[in-house]
Length: 143
Image (cartoon, rainbow, N blue to C red; front, top):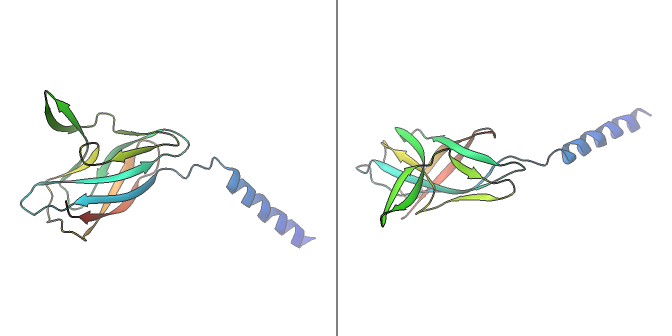
């Protein structure tokens, strides 16, 4: 009898875990950054942010190699491409994805303290409006 109760309890817990919202939160795929010599004061990081069951926003980031980190977007103004902070962060749609890529949204590392060389791995902590913060390893790649 005890075996059946334990087995039943185990199955109930497993079913509850599987039938919860199914929202694993934000999934970060392929985080990377560009090489950047020490004399350059800035660098950018890119990735794909896959949404869970509800819409969320990437609202901040942090990295030890950066004096400041901002969430940026690239815009075209009067025929000139400019970068600016992404007001309100970057929307990550429920069940969809936000793509951070060159010429678009990106995580901007300002006043960086080291040279970023191909093959380096930089820990980058991402802050979301609702989901818990995540630290990912961004691989530095050739431009």
